[in-house]
Image (tube, rainbow, N blue to C red; front, top):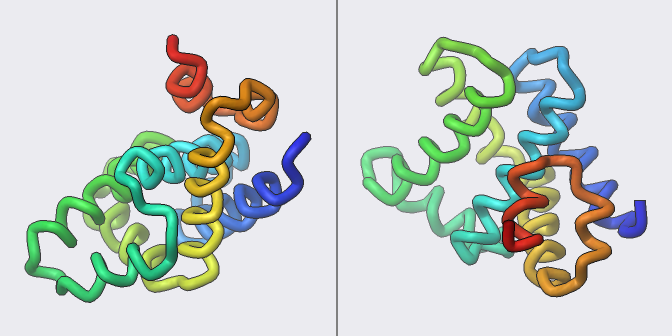
Length: 136
């Protein structure tokens, strides 16, 4: 991998996905972490305090609900877990973990800063993320 910081942050994000979702497919969890970072980058969320502001909205705020839905949906896509509540609570556990938040927001920041650098694509495994940055 050309970008050791991206690798390390993806590894951390994927680890916590494994811990909270109990999915045993490491590659899918890696892809999930990349997709979650892409969602944050597309949402212009690249700092821990931005995620904390969303969390502070409270569980009944539509902004919070919408944000957690995006995280839970990506967990569902890659873990193939059909239980909506499991995915929701896994997403909330991720959002209560500062280490995971720091890793995934750092990934989003790297994506944004290297958006025009095609060598970034060498470091990304997700076809969806690669397609987004290659303009396909």
